[in-house]
Amino acid sequence: MNFKGNDVYESNIDWVLAIVSGLAGIGIGALGYHLLNSNVARNQKVRQRLAETELELNQVKDSLNDHFARAADLVESIQRQTQELEQQLAQGAERFCDDSQIRRRLNNVPIDQGSSDEPSTAAPRDYADGNHGTLSEDFGLRQSTGEKEQPQPPRY
Image (cartoon, rainbow, N blue to C red; front, side, top):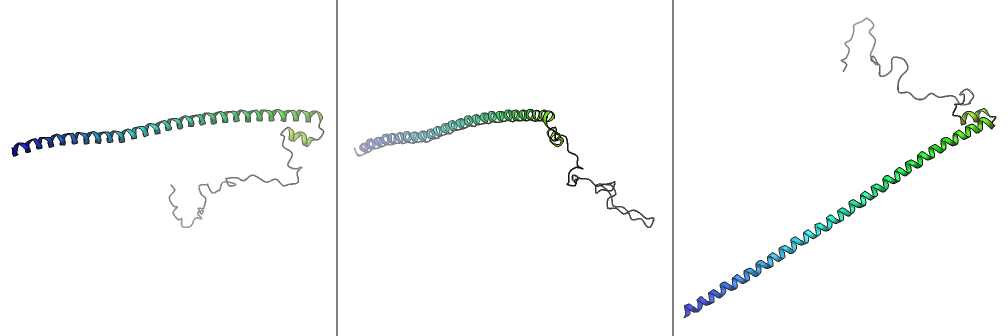
């Protein structure tokens, strides 16, 4: 009987181990599902925020495009009105003004440089006078005088 009692007791242990292992597997599976599912939910929230941010960015771009188009229209309108005002002033000066300097200024005619008290200054140039500027072929080279000619350095 002793052997028979151990046999029954051992078979109960096998069932208990099988049930405990099954419950442990179910618990580990539920824990893994929970952890993986929370990452999916977090990723969906991030994707939703990204989509909302892209929508806001597109709206801002559209509003900036509208703003700059409106600004360009206003600048064009100001330029047109300025030209009309200049024409109006020039026509009025032609009809009513006796001062020739004011007429020239309104008609964009340059005033004689000789009549002004300031000396005229030439605009700066990026080239030299004559044929021997710094960009000429022979700048910095000595002229041969018939004596022993020195070889010229190679030009690249």
